[in-house]
Length: 254
Length: 254
Image 1: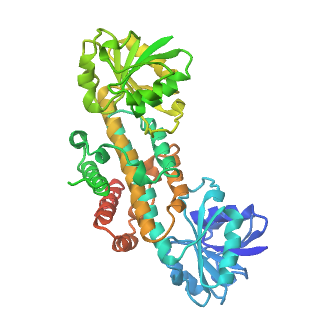
Image 2: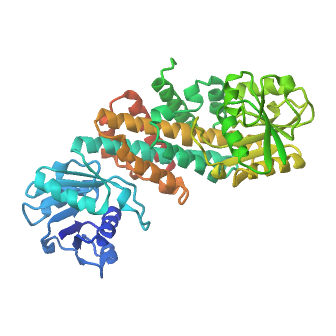
């Protein structure tokens, strides 16, 4: 049985708790959070505390708080030489104070409060300095996910930036699509099968090979027409830049 | 039984043919194409011809050729007052010569050659001038799809531009994500569950409400770090513009 203490009670913390809760070989023996309010969710399921000095002994401590608080919180922990992991994509492992053993347990997914997720398919990126620690993290990770990767801090940083492109920026393009539909009195729902198929396709064919559309075809007439039909400067700027970038990628002279 | 002649033998034409082929109440009685080579696929399944003068009588003629050829090809048709539809997202209905009855039969999906598609979930956007013609198009559309929409030329134009954002541009952001992964020796596959979940989410929650990430949180430290970690000018330009656009949308002062 791996004993885990979760430090933090936000979105990622509660999703991790839920995943471990139904796992036989893992027990979350305590959840710590500075304020009581967010701990309500965990009452009756495990021990909780709002006091750092009351954190109990465990095999792994998972810090799941905002990026800016990881370093200072890790310094305040009143025990030594224990395995302490954070769950952030953009914070280096060595931001965990080295009076404990720094490590990383990063689930690469977008979490929505209140919505169940299936951890089995979520990639877990783990990192630790010593082999034994990495093996323990791996056992913990594999208890909830089928996709466990050893990823160093530099790689994780790159993954996090790439995730901004394929998640945050992609979602914003969906929002621009919705904006254009609404303005023209068409339901955005009509685009959903296309959105799903575009996403699904990358698991079969690289995005470089999947590229289609007026920019890829260098169809100047359609590009010009689209630019004149767009309603806002920002829409036009995005259209112009991404068209230019597609054409650079696919070797057109501009 | 609705008798259809398909004019053109490209990607969309062959996917439409396949969908109609397994439908009881529709018969594709002929496929026309200028060159014989692309007609090979249809031999033994239906009548084919390379001669416009040999096109036979049908209830609906579907022109599925490149956007630029629709108008000229429709002018060459040697029959009158028949229902003639094109399948393009960006061409107005009146580009079909009016010696026949112009209409539109536009499947809003990305088609890959050689890959089967399930037409049932593909939105079909139809348009015609007269009610009877629209009803016939609707019967034809509903024989292969559960998502049939009456969409006028202005709306279809908007949908097509929105589709460039949510399909072509989104796919290009996937490619930028892959570029960043490759450069840092990480497998792009790790991002696929995130890509799928980001797409799936829009069917439950509007993209405006789904938005997350450093730009949405106005996390200046992470944004600055990401910009300095990016390797190419184009990556930096895309990051800067989409960050600015997210912040405008969500009401931050820049």
